[in-house]
Amino acid sequence: MAITEVKQTSPSQAAASSAGQQFQIEAKTLDLFYGDFQALHGINLDISQKQITALIGPSGCGKSTFLRTLNRMNDLVKGVSIKGEVRIGGENIYDKNVNVVELRKKVGMVFQKPNPFPMSIFDNIAYGPRAHGIKKKSQLTEIVERSLRQAALWEEVKDRLHSSALGLSGGQQQRLCIARVLAVEPEIVLMDEPTSALDPLATLKVEELVNELKQSYTIVIVTHNMQQAARISDITSFFLNGKIVETDVTSKIFTNPTHKQTEDYITGKFG
Image (cartoon, rainbow, N blue to C red; front, side, top):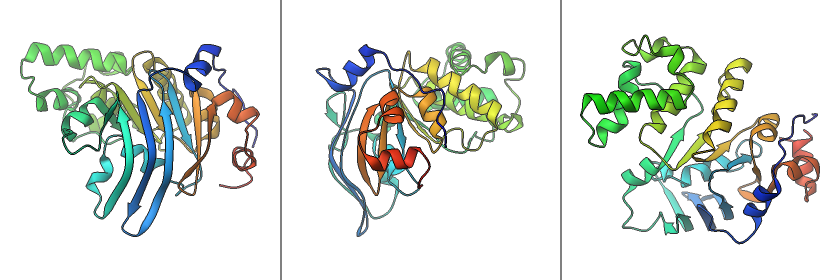
């Protein structure tokens, strides 16, 4: 499988990923178990602010499981136990005193399939702010427009804000879901294969949007699409059998990986 359009990471980005700075997300010797089955083994990964970090690897390798540890979505799965730490802004999010609702406001998530609520476009975006106590109509209107503009959707829907969100196309629904996350002003946006259910044109629009969003947000994206990882990410981490094989600047991962397992995966020899 030929890899094209490898994203070139600037020297400053490379330096930021490898030395001397305060990382926004730090996973330290993280183990995760589903009952007796160990899904993650000693994960160590530092993620820099306002970069796109791609998690790649074959199905079942632990990348989506790891993504969900970053906002404690795995807490909702029966029988899960976790050892180690995940620090965001220096705070261990698995500390017993952490407010999980506030954590998920700070760390938003976009899922594989678009999941708009069965309500109007406006109410989809206003749902989160309302849940966090914002009731004033003028303030909600401002948030809805800002979020839809950030998600590059405003011009397409501004004349039908009170129509059902279920009437949007698949690509529009996914950008709506991104806008819904942005409406509560997160610092970090997690994306679990956000374009896997979309056609190529809708995929391109979401990729363009993700590249714009990294000016304001830290983005961690799980993708099976090697070309997508090469196009949009600054850093790539390759997962295999619940472990990280290697993490590096994306251009290096795709042109000169350190480990043969990484090379075999990105050239399509397995996975």
